[in-house]
Length: 276
Image (cartoon, rainbow, N blue to C red; front, side, top):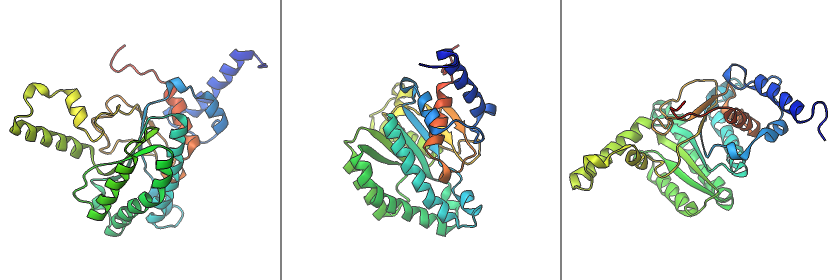
């Protein structure tokens, strides 16, 4: 039996925790509810189907510790592993993460090569567990600039996990939101030249199907770590009505408790989709 006011008292306590947690519209580490308290606040029926994540702050996390930026990227894999597991346990249908943008080629060559090799390594090391846990792996982005050996490994991973249906994990690699739209337009032009497409065929539903995430629900929630407040050319078409949650926590430090913070906050929002 609940004491101290019964159900109403418990609700008032939860309301106070929520106000403290989400004061000023972002996550707070001071006096935040515990992971167990947050888990108790989760309402399964109100969970997002699709979560997108901009995994930011790897380099700054490393530099603040006197480590090379490479160390931050490697530590970030631990966060991705934990968040992927948590999404599977919570029943989230789709997780889309931003790993390497079309602009990241401008970074130092050593860092770019490290990130290419890291994806190769992660596919080798993580794929058995992902497959065993029913995760379908998809790498979204332009593959023409990637090493042929890496493309072959990506294709093998996608083929192996194609029938899995517990969670879809989309990894944006050599991905750009503008590039994605350009690619869709180019496909439209090609189809029109062949006579397979007429002007009246093109609408929002058609264009959505032509995106790298075609056939999937758009993200309900975007999480960006690392303290920045922008979407950085990520899922420009798909994020039209997504709720956005920013946190100062660097990606290598992001854990299940932070995901729960974002989800509890998401559940408090009223999504109108342009309606009143």
